Length: 112
Length: 113
Image (cartoon, rainbow over the protein chains, first blue to last red):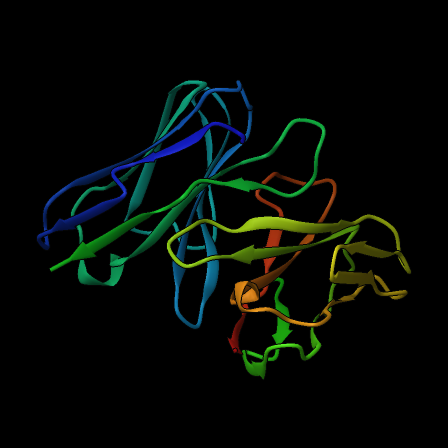
């Protein structure tokens, strides 16, 4: 268990409202990622972080921002949610000494 | 950008049958990974492959890193109902920026008891 916790697990929000999803890790991993998963598209990278206050854009970053003010927390914010952002969001970390990523359990977000 | 072509998109098989799925790319990767995702959960790493030509097993699962480094396959022998889920391949590069794990779109496996 890589100690990754995503919150909330489920959220329904209205179009135009801001939403923040949280990813919390307990093992001091340097790299953290946010993905979205949609049918027919697989997993697409939104943003990633390579350290405190160090972040970069992924493939589908429009409409999303991130912040990492401390090692353990990586926040994903939708400034003004749209229906196209209805998706399942996964946080991931790069495990120490290993390859690939370890994923959290996901947040199912519905924008109505 | 880089893409992985994973096939088939979905499979409906009878319990006990063997399963084969594969991923191809126009790019070379240094590591190939196979993940399984159960409903309502995040993907979990099944097998990691680090060398061209490598064949690795994990129980009933066998995966191979293609000689050209542009493809990989995953076989599941004697499928059982708990094999149901979505299987993803992923290729990983070294060098460049992080966020360099490229995913296939997944193979959805359904197993009929």
